[in-house]
Length: 163
Image 1 (tube, one colour):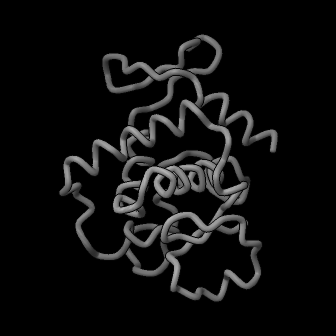
Image 2 (cartoon, rainbow, N blue to C red):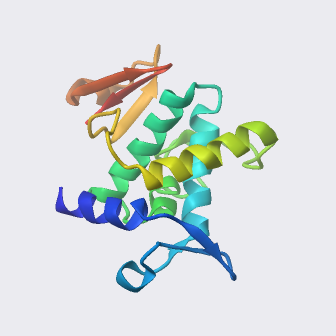
């Protein structure tokens, strides 16, 4: 929980982009830079996992990603979480879009703009978490074996969330 609070404090600061592509918290002297790449990784995860979902569903994906960043069993950066498992072997990634063999190029400009907006919002307004601390999710209708061993925390849009 302490790590989560620290990540939220770091990410919740108002972001302004500086020359060179980094976003700096409002009180940069205290927290250090937040890299634009981290924002883009979060937006890509929202875009590929939930671009057809309403705002609540997109925010839920964002919070699940940020919950993983805060949890010691996952990488401690957004991009590390999103890319966990590599990109060479299908089925080994945490997020299927990262290693499904399909292009990761954004094709829908409006959906991308919305994903960026949702990512910024999740980073600036970290509470309340609609997933209640979820670290995992799947699309409704799927029946992954791992779900039996986890607590269902929320049903939002087409996704089920677990911790």
